[in-house]
Every structure is written in C-alpha cells, then in structure tokens.
Image 1: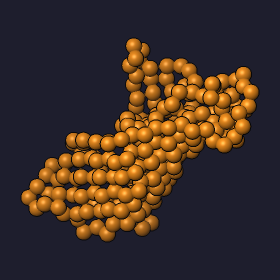
Image 2 (image 1 turned 135 degrees about the vertical axis):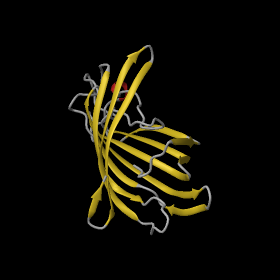
Image 3 (image 1 turned 90 degrees about the horizontal axis):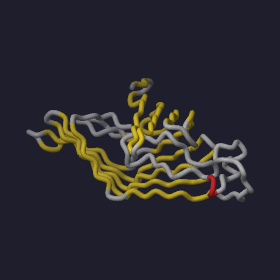
Image 4 (image 1 turned 180 degrees about the horizontal axis):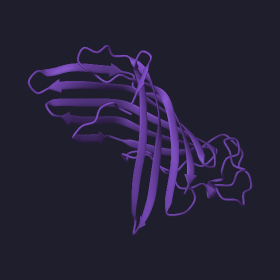
Length: 217
C-alpha cells in the first residue's frame, strides 16, 4: 500500500514470525469441518479440525485463505529493508516491528489489524544526494478477508479483502510529512498446479486522501 513503484525492488526481511493462538473460548465437541457454521469468534474451531496455517507474508501476494474461526494468528517482521530505483532516483526504506494480527470471526471471515512501530524512507538523487526524508510511525490499517471458495478443499481459492486506515505520506522534496486516510480492495487468488507447485495472483485497488477533499488512486 505504497504510492511508489519502481523498475527494480529488493526486499530484505530479517525475521518473519508466524504464530496461531486460540482465542479464549471453550472447545466444543465437533463432528463437523472447519467450514461448519457453528464455529465463530466465541465458539472456536477445534484444533483437530482447524485448517493449516496460511500466512500473508513474506509472499508478494496476499493469501486467499482465512484463518479458522475463534483463532488468533500473529505475523511480524522484526526489521524490513527495501531499495527501489527508478531512473536516477533511489528510495530506501527501513521498518521496525511490522505486525499483522488476525482474528477468525467466522469460518470464512477474518479481521486483520496491521501496524508498524517505526519506519524511515529516504529519497536520493544520483547527482545531488539525499533530497527528502520521512520517518515515524508507519501504517495503521484494518482489513476484513472473506473467502469466497477454496478454504477447505479444491484446487483454487478466491477471497475479497476491503481495507481502510491511515499511512504516513511518502517522502517527497518539499512535502510536509503527515498521515492520511487510505482505503481499497484486495482480491487474492490461489491455484494448486500439482507436483508441489502453486500459483498466486492478486488484484488491488488503492485509494488515498493525501490532498484535502480529494481521493485518488
């Protein structure tokens, strides 16, 4: 959910932590799969029926699978670094404690809260050096993933994931760095190709209000 794109991109993730923890709810006797409508945030899917862990990171595409109802999953980058070059302009970004907390609300629906403790972005010009800098707390975004099919079987899976929140403005020469609202829709798709190969794809619509009274993509 960044406003920049470049011809080359290198990302270094020092550590990715994925964990699945049960929400506080009593286990119920179950003879039904994870997709059974009886399971919810307050009636946790039993461990023996919970679908396998699926993370949205470190892939470049989001997962099409939701987490089981009543479970909590935490994904975190301890540190992340990226380099983006376009023409004679070089952008570097360093982030600390990027966290995605997921809560299974229903068998095919989960709520996600993304935040970043701190990040710094710098822009440099080949002939000038550093021309802009932005740093401070990063994004704070809520997302709702709804799996349309494929959560518990089949060769393909599709989900829709609307989101809304706030991000820090990208570094730009002469710009006043501040946070602004963002919203959008992500549509992740997964396909099992067989022989331990899989295909992931994603459509994404991003809107941001970085100018008063104006939303733009």
